[in-house]
Length: 346
Ligand code: FNR
Image (cartoon, rainbow, N blue to C red; front, top):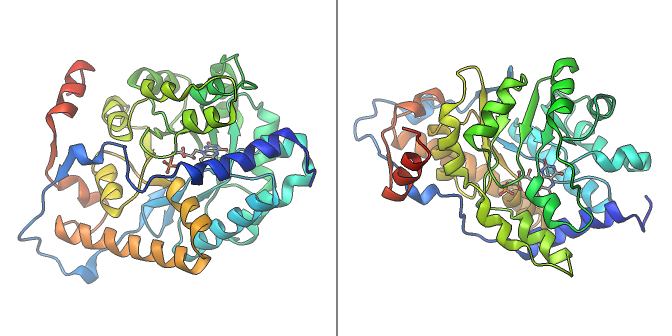
Protein backbone atom coordinates (compact mmCIF):
# COMPACT_ATOMS: atom_id res chain seq x y z
CA UNK A 1 0.00 0.00 0.00
CA UNK A 2 1.35 3.49 -0.80
CA UNK A 3 2.79 4.90 2.41
CA UNK A 4 2.95 8.63 1.84
CA UNK A 5 -0.57 9.17 0.52
CA UNK A 6 -2.35 12.10 2.22
CA UNK A 7 -5.79 10.49 2.20
CA UNK A 8 -4.44 7.31 3.80
CA UNK A 9 -2.55 9.39 6.36
CA UNK A 10 -5.75 11.27 7.21
CA UNK A 11 -7.65 8.00 7.79
CA UNK A 12 -4.87 6.78 10.09
CA UNK A 13 -5.06 10.04 12.05
CA UNK A 14 -8.83 9.53 12.40
CA UNK A 15 -8.25 6.16 14.08
CA UNK A 16 -5.63 7.60 16.42
CA UNK A 17 -7.60 10.75 17.27
CA UNK A 18 -10.89 8.88 17.74
CA UNK A 19 -9.11 6.96 20.49
CA UNK A 20 -7.36 10.03 21.91
CA UNK A 21 -10.69 11.86 22.33
CA UNK A 22 -12.76 8.79 23.19
CA UNK A 23 -15.07 9.35 26.13
CA UNK A 24 -16.71 6.52 28.09
CA UNK A 25 -19.62 8.85 28.69
CA UNK A 26 -22.22 9.51 26.00
CA UNK A 27 -23.44 13.02 25.20
CA UNK A 28 -26.16 11.74 22.87
CA UNK A 29 -29.00 12.76 25.21
CA UNK A 30 -30.15 9.33 26.36
CA UNK A 31 -30.12 10.57 29.97
CA UNK A 32 -32.97 12.90 28.93
CA UNK A 33 -35.15 9.87 28.18
CA UNK A 34 -36.60 7.34 30.63
CA UNK A 35 -38.32 4.04 29.94
CA UNK A 36 -40.59 2.56 32.59
CA UNK A 37 -40.36 -1.08 33.63
CA UNK A 38 -43.26 -3.54 33.72
CA UNK A 39 -43.83 -5.28 37.06
CA UNK A 40 -46.12 -7.85 35.40
CA UNK A 41 -44.48 -8.60 32.05
CA UNK A 42 -46.05 -12.09 31.57
CA UNK A 43 -43.03 -13.55 29.83
CA UNK A 44 -40.22 -16.01 30.32
CA UNK A 45 -36.82 -14.61 29.41
CA UNK A 46 -36.21 -17.66 27.22
CA UNK A 47 -38.98 -16.39 24.92
CA UNK A 48 -37.15 -13.15 24.12
CA UNK A 49 -36.07 -12.88 20.47
CA UNK A 50 -33.64 -10.12 19.50
CA UNK A 51 -33.90 -10.95 15.78
CA UNK A 52 -34.87 -8.02 13.58
CA UNK A 53 -35.41 -7.24 9.92
CA UNK A 54 -32.54 -5.19 8.48
CA UNK A 55 -33.48 -3.93 5.01
CA UNK A 56 -35.17 -7.21 4.11
CA UNK A 57 -32.75 -9.59 5.85
CA UNK A 58 -33.36 -11.15 9.27
CA UNK A 59 -30.33 -10.49 11.51
CA UNK A 60 -29.51 -11.67 15.04
CA UNK A 61 -29.69 -8.43 17.03
CA UNK A 62 -30.84 -4.80 16.56
CA UNK A 63 -27.30 -3.40 16.36
CA UNK A 64 -24.74 -2.98 13.55
CA UNK A 65 -21.13 -1.91 13.26
CA UNK A 66 -21.31 1.43 11.51
CA UNK A 67 -18.80 2.91 9.05
CA UNK A 68 -15.27 3.40 10.35
CA UNK A 69 -12.36 2.72 8.09
CA UNK A 70 -10.39 1.31 5.16
CA UNK A 71 -7.32 2.06 3.08
CA UNK A 72 -4.38 1.05 5.30
CA UNK A 73 -2.92 -2.01 7.03
CA UNK A 74 -4.37 -0.82 10.35
CA UNK A 75 -7.80 -0.36 8.74
CA UNK A 76 -7.55 -3.83 7.31
CA UNK A 77 -7.00 -5.19 10.82
CA UNK A 78 -10.03 -3.31 12.20
CA UNK A 79 -12.25 -4.28 9.25
CA UNK A 80 -11.11 -7.86 9.62
CA UNK A 81 -11.96 -7.92 13.32
CA UNK A 82 -15.26 -6.05 12.93
CA UNK A 83 -16.39 -8.48 10.25
CA UNK A 84 -15.48 -11.48 12.40
CA UNK A 85 -17.56 -10.03 15.22
CA UNK A 86 -20.41 -9.24 12.82
CA UNK A 87 -20.28 -12.81 11.57
CA UNK A 88 -20.33 -14.20 15.12
CA UNK A 89 -23.28 -12.08 16.28
CA UNK A 90 -25.09 -12.18 12.93
CA UNK A 91 -25.28 -8.39 12.69
CA UNK A 92 -24.56 -6.03 9.76
CA UNK A 93 -21.17 -4.36 9.31
CA UNK A 94 -20.30 -1.26 7.27
CA UNK A 95 -17.13 -0.35 5.49
CA UNK A 96 -15.50 3.03 5.99
CA UNK A 97 -15.60 5.43 3.07
CA UNK A 98 -14.30 3.68 -0.04
CA UNK A 99 -13.10 6.90 -1.74
CA UNK A 100 -9.48 5.88 -1.21
CA UNK A 101 -10.06 2.65 -3.17
CA UNK A 102 -11.23 4.59 -6.24
CA UNK A 103 -7.96 6.53 -6.26
CA UNK A 104 -5.63 3.76 -5.08
CA UNK A 105 -6.95 0.33 -6.15
CA UNK A 106 -4.16 -1.41 -4.15
CA UNK A 107 -6.17 -0.55 -1.01
CA UNK A 108 -8.93 -2.98 -2.08
CA UNK A 109 -7.83 -5.69 0.33
CA UNK A 110 -8.50 -3.50 3.38
CA UNK A 111 -12.18 -3.43 2.32
CA UNK A 112 -12.49 -6.94 0.88
CA UNK A 113 -11.80 -8.52 4.29
CA UNK A 114 -15.26 -7.35 5.32
CA UNK A 115 -16.78 -9.87 2.91
CA UNK A 116 -14.07 -12.54 3.14
CA UNK A 117 -14.49 -12.97 6.90
CA UNK A 118 -18.23 -12.76 6.72
CA UNK A 119 -19.30 -14.53 3.52
CA UNK A 120 -22.99 -14.91 4.32
CA UNK A 121 -23.40 -11.75 6.38
CA UNK A 122 -24.95 -8.35 5.74
CA UNK A 123 -22.15 -6.06 4.53
CA UNK A 124 -22.61 -2.38 3.70
CA UNK A 125 -20.44 -0.31 1.33
CA UNK A 126 -19.85 3.37 2.10
CA UNK A 127 -19.19 6.32 -0.22
CA UNK A 128 -19.27 10.10 0.01
CA UNK A 129 -22.20 12.11 -1.32
CA UNK A 130 -20.11 13.28 -4.26
CA UNK A 131 -19.15 9.79 -5.45
CA UNK A 132 -20.88 9.22 -8.78
CA UNK A 133 -23.07 6.26 -9.74
CA UNK A 134 -20.16 4.33 -11.31
CA UNK A 135 -18.10 4.63 -8.14
CA UNK A 136 -21.06 3.60 -5.99
CA UNK A 137 -21.46 0.51 -8.21
CA UNK A 138 -17.73 -0.31 -7.94
CA UNK A 139 -17.88 0.01 -4.15
CA UNK A 140 -20.82 -2.40 -3.96
CA UNK A 141 -19.18 -4.82 -6.34
CA UNK A 142 -15.86 -4.94 -4.50
CA UNK A 143 -17.38 -6.34 -1.30
CA UNK A 144 -20.60 -7.83 -2.75
CA UNK A 145 -22.42 -5.38 -0.53
CA UNK A 146 -26.02 -5.95 0.55
CA UNK A 147 -26.59 -2.19 0.90
CA UNK A 148 -24.88 1.13 0.24
CA UNK A 149 -24.34 3.98 2.70
CA UNK A 150 -23.87 7.52 1.40
CA UNK A 151 -22.45 9.81 4.07
CA UNK A 152 -23.27 13.49 4.58
CA UNK A 153 -20.44 15.23 6.44
CA UNK A 154 -20.63 18.98 5.84
CA UNK A 155 -19.38 20.01 9.31
CA UNK A 156 -16.47 17.57 9.03
CA UNK A 157 -15.44 18.88 5.58
CA UNK A 158 -15.66 22.47 6.82
CA UNK A 159 -13.42 21.66 9.78
CA UNK A 160 -10.76 20.28 7.41
CA UNK A 161 -8.49 22.80 5.65
CA UNK A 162 -8.33 20.43 2.65
CA UNK A 163 -12.06 19.61 2.91
CA UNK A 164 -14.72 20.00 0.21
CA UNK A 165 -16.44 23.34 -0.07
CA UNK A 166 -19.05 22.47 -2.69
CA UNK A 167 -22.08 20.79 -1.17
CA UNK A 168 -24.37 20.40 -4.19
CA UNK A 169 -25.09 16.75 -3.46
CA UNK A 170 -28.79 16.11 -3.98
CA UNK A 171 -28.78 15.40 -7.74
CA UNK A 172 -25.98 12.89 -7.29
CA UNK A 173 -27.72 11.13 -4.40
CA UNK A 174 -30.93 10.95 -6.45
CA UNK A 175 -29.05 9.49 -9.42
CA UNK A 176 -27.57 6.75 -7.21
CA UNK A 177 -30.87 5.99 -5.45
CA UNK A 178 -32.67 5.70 -8.81
CA UNK A 179 -30.13 3.41 -10.41
CA UNK A 180 -28.66 1.14 -7.79
CA UNK A 181 -30.13 -2.27 -7.10
CA UNK A 182 -29.36 -2.57 -3.36
CA UNK A 183 -30.98 -0.50 -0.58
CA UNK A 184 -29.35 2.92 -0.08
CA UNK A 185 -28.95 4.40 3.39
CA UNK A 186 -28.07 8.09 3.65
CA UNK A 187 -26.25 8.79 6.90
CA UNK A 188 -24.74 11.65 8.83
CA UNK A 189 -21.39 11.15 10.56
CA UNK A 190 -22.22 12.30 14.09
CA UNK A 191 -23.95 15.69 13.77
CA UNK A 192 -27.55 14.53 13.21
CA UNK A 193 -30.24 15.06 10.57
CA UNK A 194 -33.02 17.64 10.95
CA UNK A 195 -36.66 17.34 9.88
CA UNK A 196 -35.82 19.52 6.88
CA UNK A 197 -32.99 17.20 5.82
CA UNK A 198 -35.16 14.14 6.32
CA UNK A 199 -37.89 15.58 4.10
CA UNK A 200 -35.37 16.71 1.45
CA UNK A 201 -33.96 13.18 1.30
CA UNK A 202 -37.41 11.60 1.22
CA UNK A 203 -38.34 13.86 -1.69
CA UNK A 204 -35.46 12.56 -3.78
CA UNK A 205 -36.45 8.95 -3.10
CA UNK A 206 -34.25 8.01 -0.12
CA UNK A 207 -36.02 5.37 1.95
CA UNK A 208 -33.39 4.62 4.59
CA UNK A 209 -31.79 7.18 6.89
CA UNK A 210 -29.22 6.86 9.64
CA UNK A 211 -29.61 10.08 11.61
CA UNK A 212 -26.15 9.58 13.22
CA UNK A 213 -26.38 12.33 15.80
CA UNK A 214 -23.97 14.05 18.15
CA UNK A 215 -22.83 12.51 21.40
CA UNK A 216 -20.01 10.13 20.58
CA UNK A 217 -17.31 10.49 17.92
CA UNK A 218 -16.88 14.22 17.21
CA UNK A 219 -15.36 15.00 13.83
CA UNK A 220 -15.27 18.75 14.56
CA UNK A 221 -12.86 17.94 17.38
CA UNK A 222 -10.94 15.30 15.41
CA UNK A 223 -10.45 17.47 12.31
CA UNK A 224 -9.57 20.49 14.42
CA UNK A 225 -6.80 18.46 16.05
CA UNK A 226 -5.42 17.82 12.53
CA UNK A 227 -5.89 21.45 11.47
CA UNK A 228 -2.98 23.48 12.80
CA UNK A 229 -4.41 26.80 11.70
CA UNK A 230 -7.97 26.88 13.02
CA UNK A 231 -9.71 25.25 15.96
CA UNK A 232 -13.23 24.68 14.64
CA UNK A 233 -14.33 22.32 17.41
CA UNK A 234 -17.13 24.78 18.24
CA UNK A 235 -18.87 23.74 15.01
CA UNK A 236 -20.14 20.73 16.98
CA UNK A 237 -22.40 23.15 18.85
CA UNK A 238 -24.44 23.37 15.64
CA UNK A 239 -25.23 19.66 15.79
CA UNK A 240 -28.30 17.73 16.86
CA UNK A 241 -27.80 15.06 19.50
CA UNK A 242 -28.85 11.53 18.59
CA UNK A 243 -31.91 11.86 20.81
CA UNK A 244 -32.84 15.25 19.31
CA UNK A 245 -32.41 13.87 15.81
CA UNK A 246 -34.62 10.90 16.67
CA UNK A 247 -37.27 13.41 17.75
CA UNK A 248 -36.85 15.19 14.39
CA UNK A 249 -37.29 11.83 12.65
CA UNK A 250 -40.73 11.39 14.20
CA UNK A 251 -42.01 13.51 11.31
CA UNK A 252 -40.57 11.13 8.72
CA UNK A 253 -42.84 9.21 6.38
CA UNK A 254 -44.21 5.82 7.53
CA UNK A 255 -42.29 4.23 4.67
CA UNK A 256 -38.92 5.61 5.74
CA UNK A 257 -36.67 3.27 7.71
CA UNK A 258 -34.90 5.16 10.46
CA UNK A 259 -31.58 3.94 11.85
CA UNK A 260 -29.88 5.58 14.80
CA UNK A 261 -26.23 6.01 15.69
CA UNK A 262 -24.00 8.47 17.49
CA UNK A 263 -22.77 8.04 21.06
CA UNK A 264 -24.20 4.58 21.66
CA UNK A 265 -22.36 3.28 24.73
CA UNK A 266 -24.74 0.97 26.59
CA UNK A 267 -27.50 -1.57 26.06
CA UNK A 268 -29.92 0.94 27.57
CA UNK A 269 -28.92 3.51 24.91
CA UNK A 270 -29.70 0.87 22.27
CA UNK A 271 -33.16 0.09 23.69
CA UNK A 272 -34.02 3.78 24.13
CA UNK A 273 -33.06 4.48 20.49
CA UNK A 274 -35.24 1.56 19.35
CA UNK A 275 -38.12 2.85 21.49
CA UNK A 276 -37.73 6.26 19.83
CA UNK A 277 -38.26 4.76 16.38
CA UNK A 278 -34.95 3.31 15.20
CA UNK A 279 -35.11 -0.03 13.39
CA UNK A 280 -31.54 -0.83 14.36
CA UNK A 281 -28.74 0.99 16.14
CA UNK A 282 -25.25 1.70 14.77
CA UNK A 283 -22.05 1.58 16.78
CA UNK A 284 -18.66 2.95 15.66
CA UNK A 285 -16.64 4.69 18.38
CA UNK A 286 -17.44 2.14 21.08
CA UNK A 287 -16.34 -0.79 18.88
CA UNK A 288 -13.20 0.95 17.63
CA UNK A 289 -12.24 1.93 21.18
CA UNK A 290 -12.48 -1.68 22.34
CA UNK A 291 -10.46 -2.96 19.41
CA UNK A 292 -7.77 -0.31 20.00
CA UNK A 293 -7.59 -0.61 23.79
CA UNK A 294 -8.37 -4.28 24.43
CA UNK A 295 -7.83 -7.63 22.75
CA UNK A 296 -10.12 -9.10 20.11
CA UNK A 297 -11.37 -11.68 22.64
CA UNK A 298 -12.13 -8.98 25.22
CA UNK A 299 -14.00 -6.99 22.58
CA UNK A 300 -15.96 -10.09 21.64
CA UNK A 301 -16.88 -10.64 25.30
CA UNK A 302 -17.89 -6.99 25.62
CA UNK A 303 -20.38 -7.27 22.75
CA UNK A 304 -21.61 -10.65 23.97
CA UNK A 305 -22.45 -8.97 27.28
CA UNK A 306 -24.04 -5.97 25.55
CA UNK A 307 -26.38 -8.30 23.68
CA UNK A 308 -27.27 -10.20 26.89
CA UNK A 309 -28.00 -6.84 28.54
CA UNK A 310 -30.34 -5.83 25.70
CA UNK A 311 -32.28 -9.03 26.47
CA UNK A 312 -32.36 -8.22 30.20
CA UNK A 313 -33.75 -4.74 29.48
CA UNK A 314 -36.40 -6.19 27.16
CA UNK A 315 -37.51 -8.52 29.98
CA UNK A 316 -37.63 -5.56 32.38
CA UNK A 317 -39.91 -3.54 30.09
CA UNK A 318 -42.06 -6.54 29.17
CA UNK A 319 -41.02 -6.84 25.52
CA UNK A 320 -40.68 -10.32 23.98
CA UNK A 321 -39.21 -8.93 20.79
CA UNK A 322 -37.97 -5.70 19.24
CA UNK A 323 -41.42 -4.68 17.97
CA UNK A 324 -42.84 -4.88 21.50
CA UNK A 325 -40.34 -2.29 22.76
CA UNK A 326 -42.74 0.27 21.27
CA UNK A 327 -45.22 -0.54 24.09
CA UNK A 328 -42.85 0.65 26.85
CA UNK A 329 -43.87 3.96 28.43
CA UNK A 330 -41.36 6.71 27.60
CA UNK A 331 -40.77 9.94 29.52
CA UNK A 332 -38.82 12.94 28.18
CA UNK A 333 -37.16 15.45 30.51
CA UNK A 334 -38.28 19.11 30.36
CA UNK A 335 -35.34 20.21 28.17
CA UNK A 336 -36.27 17.66 25.53
CA UNK A 337 -39.94 18.65 25.65
CA UNK A 338 -38.85 22.24 25.25
CA UNK A 339 -36.71 21.20 22.25
CA UNK A 340 -39.63 19.38 20.64
CA UNK A 341 -41.95 22.36 21.27
CA UNK A 342 -39.54 24.85 19.73
CA UNK A 343 -39.06 22.52 16.77
CA UNK A 344 -42.87 22.17 16.55
CA UNK A 345 -42.73 18.38 16.94
CA UNK A 346 -45.24 16.76 19.31
C1 FNR B 1 -16.30 7.25 11.26
N1 FNR B 1 -17.54 7.50 10.63
C2 FNR B 1 -17.63 7.38 9.26
N2 FNR B 1 -18.85 7.43 8.65
C3 FNR B 1 -18.95 7.26 7.32
O1 FNR B 1 -20.07 7.27 6.81
N3 FNR B 1 -17.84 7.04 6.55
C4 FNR B 1 -16.59 6.99 7.09
O2 FNR B 1 -15.60 6.78 6.39
C5 FNR B 1 -16.46 7.18 8.49
N4 FNR B 1 -15.24 7.18 9.10
C6 FNR B 1 -15.14 7.13 10.46
C7 FNR B 1 -13.91 6.96 11.08
C8 FNR B 1 -13.80 6.82 12.45
C9 FNR B 1 -12.46 6.62 13.07
C10 FNR B 1 -14.98 6.87 13.24
C11 FNR B 1 -14.91 6.66 14.73
C12 FNR B 1 -16.21 7.09 12.65
C13 FNR B 1 -18.72 7.94 11.38
C14 FNR B 1 -19.51 6.80 12.01
O3 FNR B 1 -20.01 5.92 11.05
C15 FNR B 1 -20.67 7.34 12.89
O4 FNR B 1 -21.61 7.98 12.07
C16 FNR B 1 -20.17 8.32 13.96
O5 FNR B 1 -18.88 7.97 14.40
C17 FNR B 1 -21.10 8.39 15.17
O6 FNR B 1 -21.16 7.14 15.84
P1 FNR B 1 -20.28 6.79 17.17
O7 FNR B 1 -18.83 6.76 16.74
O8 FNR B 1 -20.52 7.88 18.16
O9 FNR B 1 -20.76 5.44 17.58
